[in-house]
Figure 1 (cartoon, helix red, strand yellow):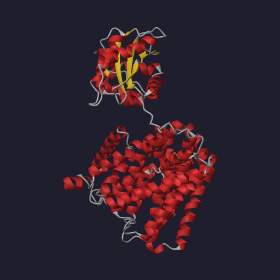
Figure 2 (figure 1 turned 90 degrees about the vertical axis):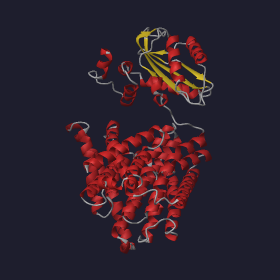
Figure 3 (figure 1 turned 60 degrees about the horizontal axis):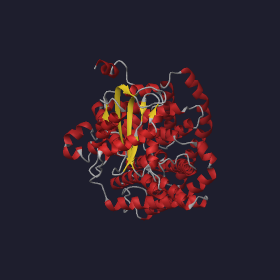
Figure 4 (figure 1 turned 30 degrees about the horizontal axis):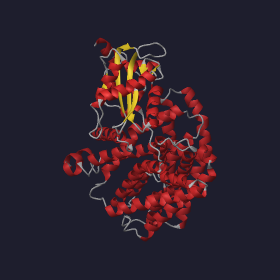
Length: 572
């Protein structure tokens, strides 16, 4: 069991990081890790070893299943924390209009296809038609708030009127969608014979009643308890334990009334996240705690369950993808138009709401476990969730002509990191860094190092690019390159870059951007200045002996332990 968990987490984290560096959702890499370790790859290549690591039955299988249930409960807790009820209340009228059309159209289309063509849509042969049609309607209408928020942040749209409306609508979709799905889960648990009007009403009443309790008495109790927890427990352990305890109690309550535990965890997250006493730092800590361990375990376990190659049905995947994208985009665009948004902004709202992401995968997995859908529909829904998450950003970019924000560390390369420049003058330092960048150019890129060095020096002659804390950012916009490049060099003794404070420059960032990218150049320069406004961080960067330690410093924002790498640098 321990070997299986260690292997699953290691692969999930590694593949997730690779996906993130490629600009893709981390969940895509985590699911691929599961495919590699599951029946799709390892099960076909080394079936005995796969059976040893991930047995289909027995105590190890039960333990792994329990761990994945615990992981998805914590993941839904974090999803609930993202729900900002105050934003929904402030924009309630427009969000309700867009939300209704964004739910009704996809739900109606999905439910109709599930009712009239269950075999074509991949319903399980023994599934109740009503339960299957309701599930398919919910599956096509729910949104993925974390994916949507990340997409809007990347495009610098999060704080705009359009961005706030998209977030408010996504919150509405999450709340309504999960209440409806709670009813569907109740019906799944009762079995096909209990799908009567009485069972539907009873399940709906219980779901709504518990949601109302959590938004009133539960929210009040959590809000009153948080200051006490902060005051009388160690941070962050105390608040982490409190959040997990609340989520587990809430999950147990919904499980006891016949609704899946994840609904209770989601409501606990909403109630906890809505408290003004939950600090942003605490929220980020909870998200990192769950997102770095439990979420990767859960999403990697998805790939273990099904042979994605054997059950991949291209026709069904295309039908699900086309219906999902068209119905949600049209529904969101129609609602935004009715709410008074211009046509182009209305289309952006529809495209943003089309991102399904992890929520879709959670629903599909539960339906598969209850025997409502077949393996081929499960694969189609997972593919649809991933594809819609990937295409949302580029589609919005195309409509608005906006690009995703870029950080200077995205332009770094190990070969363009020079920890010990030999230069005695700015010209020599720039020349060394230009040569370092030249060694990283792609086949379609080209420039003459001497010409580039002259261009950078010409810009430097007009005004010094030296900043505070011994940093300089020489730069130029060039013909012949298609992407931005940033080289980093360190001059241990320092050189005179004509800084305003008169201090010698020791950390030099050479920024080269395509000729037409004026805004991008300014964005990269501002990002460098913002990152190293703290003198401690700048001095730590100067002491980094390797590219790996430099990137680690950027990611953590903390200098290395002075007893390890810094001492090695001084001794060397």
